[in-house]
Amino acid sequence: MISVIYLARLRDALGVSKEEIPAAENVADLLAILRSRGGSWACELAEGKAFKVAVNHALVPPETPLNAGDEVAFLPPVTGG
Amino acid sequence: MPVRIQTADFDMSAEIATMRKANPKIGAVASFVGVVRDMNDGDAVAGMFLEHYPVMTESALQEIIAEAHTRWDFFDALIIHRVGQLAPLDQIVFVAVTSAHRGDAFDACHFIMDFLKTNAPFWKRESTPAGERWVDARVTDDAAAARWKR
Image (cartoon, rainbow over all chains, first blue to last red; front, top):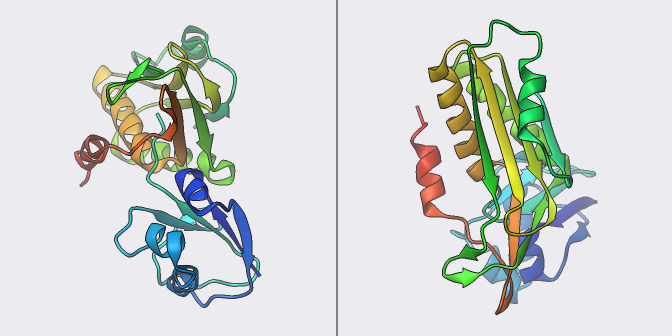
């Protein structure tokens, strides 16, 4: 299983803070699975939308492979400071 | 390279005194404090909630300080960032840098703050008369961080 976490604005827009996905080959594959749900998933995670992906707490590009036990987080643009 | 994420307020004088303690080689201390305003994008702001991604926040801030160390010669950098519920006038963030001369302290402090704005996983949700809303990321923050690209 892969743990998927949605933060801040994305969590509110998708209505989910955390879920488990059985498997995904890499980040791009996981994104395809999530987008295929349609609705706000397809819209919020669409290509070109400003969000970043972290795997095990480090920002990564879409081709990053995923393994069982990984924690993937979707981060909307940050607004701290 | 100390980094602290906390709900409690901070005392910048006490923090700077601790950083300077027993180091007569320090000739400059540059610092920045960010505070909550009562207005944003033309709307009154009654308060805001600072959310972060706890497992990632500290390492993201440490990386920013480590990057600053590769660019400038300074002794220490401190970042304190508050999370949770804050009200107008509250302090949000503190950055301080100690160095031998002012140039390194000024530039490293400026750099750390600019990169914190675009690279550290914090999010602001503010309360306005129209309800709660997530603060939008600013293009000007990206531009500020881009100035330091090399």
